[in-house]
Amino acid sequence: MSKNEVSFSIARHAAWAPGVTSSARWSEWAAQPWRIEPGEGPKLAAMPAMLRRRAGLLGRMALEVAYDCLGQEADVPTVFCSRHGEVGRAIGLLQDLARGEPLSPTAFGLAVHNASAGLFSIARADRANHIALAAGSASVEHAVIEACSLLADGAPSVLLVACDEPLPALLSSFEDCDEQPYAFAGSWCRQASVRCACPGAAKSRKRRPRPRPAAWKCCASSWVKPIVWNAARARSAGPGAAMLEKLGLCWRVLATGLSFAVFGLGGLVLRVIVFPLLALCVREQGARVRAARATIRLTFRAFVGLMRGLGVLRYEVHGWTSSIAPASSFSRITRR
Image 1 (cartoon, rainbow, N blue to C red):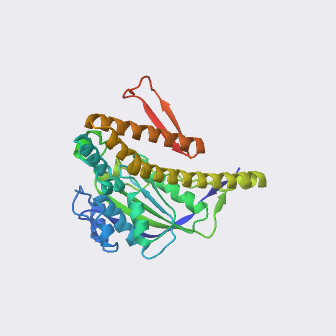
Image 2: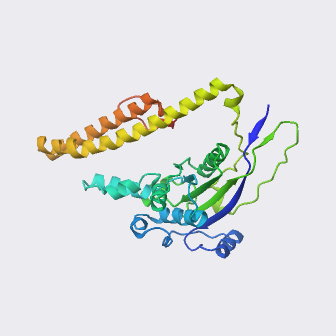
Image 3: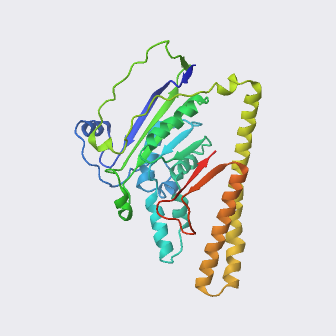
C-alpha cells in the first residue's frame, strides 16, 4: 500500500507583532522571548486607505504579512487561520444589541472570520480561492493540512497566514494559554513532483522537534505530523468513480453558489420588505423587537435547512434535552 506525500518549499515568509517588526527583533525574541503586548498596528501602506481604515489590529497584522509575502503576485490561493478571529468586534456588536443600540453594518461585516481574507481579495482585485478557518489550539496545524491539500490538488503555490490576539476582557476567563498578538505568513511552492513512498522501501528518519520558546508552547500544542494525501484514490477506483467525483464537485460548487445567492436575497427582502412592514403593523416596541427576532430565527432555520437539503453542510445536535440546552450540550456543523 503506497502513500502519496506532498513535497513543498517555503519560498518567502514574513512575521509581524507589536514591537517586533524586523528580522533582527525576531532573532532577539527567539533567543530570549518576552511577552508581546497589544499595541499599535502596522501602517499597512500597501492597502488603499478606504479599506485600510476598516481593519483592526488583528486584520492589519494579517494583511501586513500577507502583502509582504505575496507582493504583486496574483491568482495564489490563500489560507487564513486564527483561533479567535475578530471576536472583539463580535462582543461589541452583542453589547450594542443588549443595550438596544443600532448595529453597525460595517462592524458586522468585519466581524466574520473571513474578513481579512475578503479585504485582501478586494484590495488586490484578486479572485483566487481563499479560505478562513479556526480549529482551537490546533488552528495552525489544520491550516497546514489545508495548504498541503491545495498543493496536492494542483495549485503551484499557496499563501498561508496565521494570526491571533488576546481575548477581550469579557472572555479572559476562558483563556487556556498566554495569548499574545502576532501574525506570520509563508508562501509555499509545490516541488516538481509528488513523491511516492512505500512502506518498507526506505526507513523513515524520525526528526526530533526543535525546542520552541516557552511563550509559544501552549498556543501551538502539537507538532504537525507528516501530511499524507491519497490523491490517486479516485483514479485507482476507475473512470466511473472519477466521473462521480467530478459530478459531486460540480454539484457542491452550484449548491454553494445558490446558498450565497439565497442568503443575499433573503437579507435584502428582510431589510426592504419584512422589517418595514413590522414597523408599520406592530406599534409597541417590545412586541416589534420580539417579532423581528422571531423572524430572523425562522429565516435562519430555513436557510440552514436549505443548505442541509442541498448537501452543503450537515449538522448534529448532542445532549439537547429541552428548549434550552444545558451547558454540557453542543452542536457540530460540518461543511461538506
